[in-house]
Image 1 (spheres, helix red, strand yellow):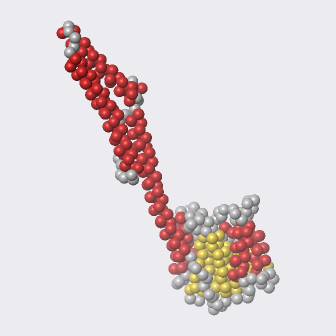
Image 2 (cartoon, rainbow, N blue to C red):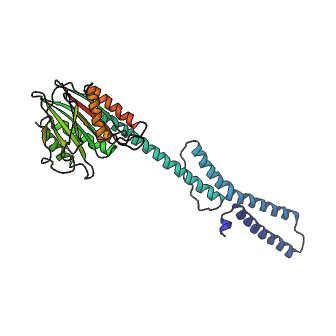
Image 3 (cartoon, one colour):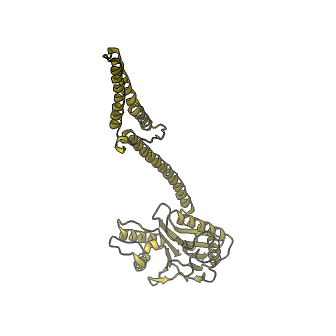
Length: 362
């Protein structure tokens, strides 16, 4: 019976045979009772009934349902609104209807995905523009120091954070790195930037800015999300340079008179890891003479890999700083180290955000 349900031809033939048997029985019964030959008009009536039945059966089982399917297909091809075909048939027409439903469901899902993707891309474009507006276009001109920087995100929205804030008698220069990259890292970066900008306007020390930023950012981030950071503070009146670390990379200091590079661990605790970092956030002074430079960076620099899987590394960065520190100032050092990293990586994909800042005492 399952085979009969699955085939229009068999279904049509069985119905035709059963109907013919019934009509044949009636025809035979008429001959039996009348004992005469059935008149020709009765014969033609029988043939007419059979033909009408064949036509009605063909229309019911084939033409009407097939036309329904084809009309919906035509709507799809013309880009018009179509309807799902509801049927319990498992024959050829049922299979065709089921195929139509499956294909159009796929169309609907794809169209929905495209719509969602377009919406996400539009929102991502807005986020990218917002992040660009957060980052400074150029470093401030400050008597006593020169600042040069370069930033290259690994994705559309980066997790590296940096800024230069000229506030009263102090200039804050910092660089930070949120765990991971992408939209989530970008949001955390934006919050940290906003908080540092706000706190630096009325707090009187870099330590206070770091402690209060951590206190507030902790409320909004998960334990697995945190941000390392190191901040320099240049006092315009005294010319002193101090730094506060928050679990970030090393600070590199180029000494003009010796041509050597000092390596200082930034120290401290990353923002967002503990509710209170006042115990680990310490202000330390960096004695600087004319021509000395401080280099701040994110781990996208030192962890950049070449085609052989080798890391650029801290030692290579120190050597490049020594090489370019002698003939160049802040801008030249920043440019040539950035080029050195790009040459080292070659055509390999960039796996993490890269930020490089050079501050020169003039």
